[in-house]
Length: 456
Image 1 (tube, rainbow, N blue to C red):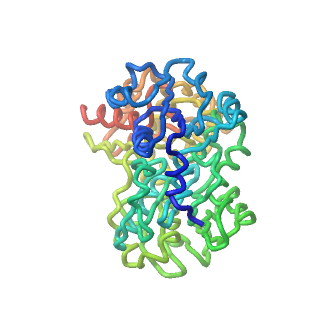
Image 2: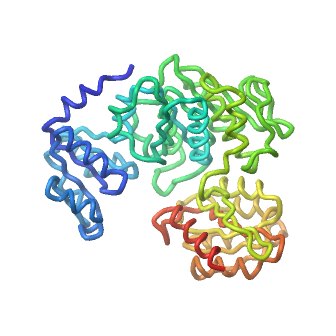
Image 3: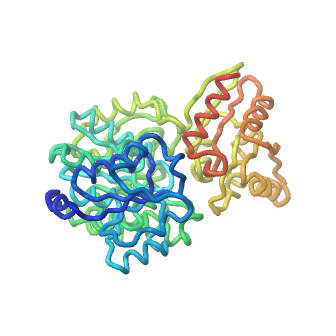
């Protein structure tokens, strides 16, 4: 049951509200809270001079706490909006909660009060593509669509503009879901595999966080699951609403991929070979989106989107062809499963650039499952020695040798891959690791790769 946003407006007026994290995504939230009459304090680890001009402009309207001790000033607040990457068991938040402060998040409050039908997408891989495709399907059918969450623009400050007849599509990360007490009406879990174990205590906590996308649904709500994933298919037993499955390995009643064709309720939608995106993993992403949209979008509209969708930036995106070599930016691939999916989708062995920030996940699949798709492995970043060990173990245990080249920097990795490549080859930046050892995010890493390649 959706709640009346006037309740929130009345509650938040004159309250002391803290916003943890003063990044670009939280600035609209701060402005919105000020508009609603809250007394806002903002908290960020960075120094004031590094927070940007927009924060400086707000400094006379909000109290700003910054620097290494920024969280030591949470006392006396009525409500705290925490940043998604901050654990709920952080001692500072625990202490504030014990003193009566309500801990929440922008996404949780949005879902409580949003009038429109909400679709949520989570998973280890494929979230962004599935979210984007679902948004495009609904737009093609003529709906006013808002896309947000982990991608797009912040939506909470637009909540009064969103009507009952609009549609909202949200990409939801494990960090956003971890403390969620409300779920979207339609939930998709694309797949699950070990990821973000640098932030989560263990795999169980990661899985439990993902479950919040459906645990608070009602009996009329819908949960869409990957039948082929051992973890996600077991979620059906905990669902309160309708459960539907998609598969790329077996013919199901709901949606499946067989003989190169995507089917919805046994009706042919499109052939994968005719789509602009490649790979079975993309077929799975589309099947999930088709299921979510089926009550609102025709088969013809689905086919049109499938045939024209060019893919999402940084996701196996062709940067250019130079001297007969194709260069692909797959910077989004921050896990081995994502990298393997992309390698399988490409049509020849790849000169792979891999490595980055260590999320404490097993990287051996890059070698032991990926070797058949890799011509050369160019390794870079904090995990380069961990990845090299995986390829060394492959050689020692299986007698399978993949040439490994160690790079001293990201730029060095790109130039090594260029030097190794001949006409007809593919170079793919598909790191299997996060970017935080050298870049702010995967987008910055992908943009740097594209800039280097375009400068050849």
